[in-house]
Image (cartoon, rainbow, N blue to C red):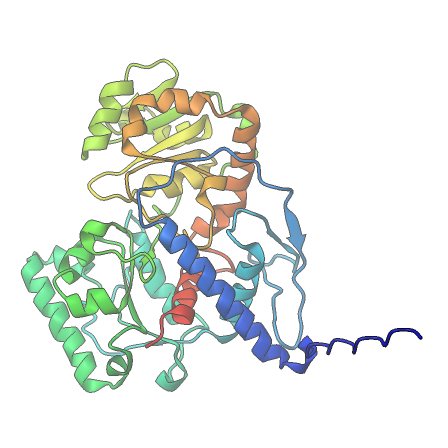
Length: 428
């Protein structure tokens, strides 16, 4: 007599029994939370050392239109619809692709209409200078499809304060703090939205260090709301899992974008600038007479020739980016634009889009103590590794470019992506 067969194991409920939309949202939320948690904890300590690694072959994920996601985008003005390359320059390429598509489809921001245009609103006539990122964001958010006039539809609320104009009037930091405090208090008393989350779904943008100084005396604003700042450092209360590092981009760029020009890059490393920080003084004193590193202890004088400073980026493999009076520097975006691998020389700098982009794939991240071994560290990077870094750098250039009007995947949309991630994680 044959033994009776054991009863067949009950099949689990098929995935299709779950709502596709609900399942996708659950997966996105879980992956986003895990990604943000991992990257935030990774950035809590000192800036990680650069590790030499070869990325796996890049994959091209076609962008297609469907009823649920409209993922086909124009990469340039007037460009044909085409596929977008999602390589491992992103921490999790598929998660970024899906999050970005969902952001474009759903994200809504309400801009508070109150405020004195002479004091708070920053709509400069010329979007130039090292603090232009602030002005570009103000202009782009007002003209974007992310803006909603219905606060009940909003995922986040934008507090349009800008202290840039106050500085020109000679206002002290103490008075700036009072002015901003009164402004925010007015919004809290007039509208009900802040009190629903204690400001956790509110954000403000300031690239100018004056804005950081003017708001750091307002703990309710600094600790609760999302801050997009160009000076992401602990000494100004920057909170990595909540706040955003705004890229400091000096636009318009004086010369066209560099890249795919490895054969022209014969200088090992380059830096020229003012000695306005300890690390810059050490950098200049240690390497200014070196024959392989092009290090100048002052910014190149225009009398030397037209755009000499910018042209040196084209001839250099690695561009040194030490912190100045703040940890940030427009030199990082300059290096990326001109195709020169940025060498981040800072003990702490929460790099822009750090929870989306893997900076180790297109830059060299060092600690300040490594300045004494800088030359050897750069020489130890093989030609193959340099080529990989350079090719990856070209892929991320579009993320560090402001445009008016903005275009997909540019600096504005990357900032919005960061804000969208914060919206997905921070809940009260």
